[in-house]
Image (cartoon, rainbow over all chains, first blue to last red; front, side, top):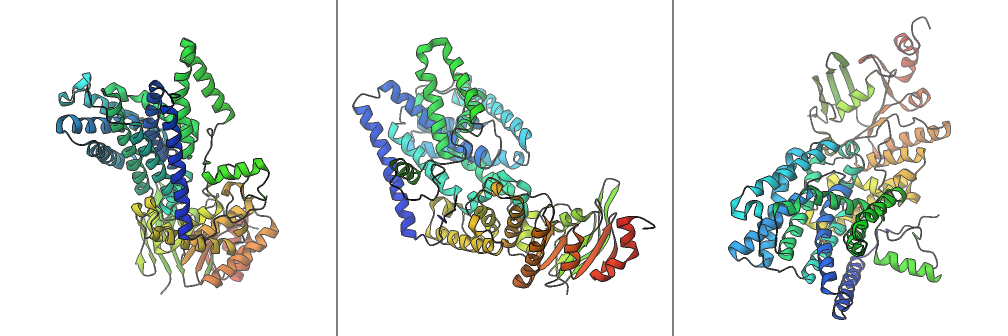
Length: 339
Length: 254
């Protein structure tokens, strides 16, 4: 296959912003379709609730993908940052009557700051050591919250007002997606990926690994904080056990199944794994069995996840259609979807 | 004043002295070879020059500035770059991305610029890309800019490593066995390339290599390391005749 230089340095700025506008229209179109289906009653309120919950976990999973998929740091305490975000924003809403946006922001910042404090010492660890450490951190957070009476201790917080509408969740998820997609294709994103690929070589090329690991960890955890805040105002009830280690593992599954290092993979993975168990409800107790078989099967046949490190892009879809229609002359990268 | 001035460099791992009292001088635009039998401490010396190991004693001066103990990632901005004995590319990134990574330390954009793709960031990105493509062209890899590094054949991976190190715009380039695993044809090409790089960029090159033909061909000055000590130094002709060197390589009575 001949390689055509698709990243010509002469792409004009207006062309780049044109691409953003196309993507924006794409996002709006997806939103429009969902809303249309809801209004037509094809998606009932039960299914909408599942979609909302998928959206919330998708946001957290994006953050996890940044840490796990792009930076290559195995963290097992991601749900703890959701918990921090959830509690901080719920307290802001209930005890301080803060507007929703402020509550969410406080949750995001709190999760980010705590990620910074915990990340500084533990991100020096590698591989399994980091995993164990973050796992322990998650449990510590759980126990700490259980012992704070101000937030209800083990009883949790109840009757948090419902404020997370589908629109808010959808656009938060889209914003997080765009933010990460932008970041990954810049010099800082390359530095982050270089650390995943080979930390020693990255360091020899002038990249300070601790700094970039911290950046990724704080950003990723802040996204978990946002997801936590949304969850609190979606579920109306949170308790420390909501965000225990099994939630962290769930999110790792979403990311790994979708493809580590692919944001659209995280979208696919999360939607599949949140919706699948629900849609198998009719099978009663065989549900988890089928779920497990599907997971094992996917891991055997696609060990790098459904999408690997590839992305689904508007351009990729157009190219695919061109190829299917046989109209497209020569597409630069017709071997894969997206760029 | 020499570009690189190493004095009494020693490193001990527990009871083992891996490199002992090494003195070395590299001038501007020099091509210097570092040879020696396996386990002589050549790579260890490299690792000290690039901040991976902190020497037990001795000092390293680069452009008149002490750099021993400097962190590896800060060494790059002091204008030293290296390649690795066992190829260490960013395998799942494209060839172009690999090279662009070493331009990162010059970046003037902050995180916000990167997230929002501000015009400043777009402009910088384009400049980086052009620069990187230029380095790829030099190493004859520009046709493969968008391929993943892991899909390149071995010889090209070696060349990509050199391109990546060159992109950091060093004054001193450290090459750790660049010809390892190459066939004679590829080695000959590499020899030419190293010589050309030195002339074109006006940089100094320190080369670890076992391929004696390459070393004798290309180096202006050679240091011979054996059991952590410099046993000989000089022009290639004198090294070839040096009895100590012959002994270190072939044993006594050869």
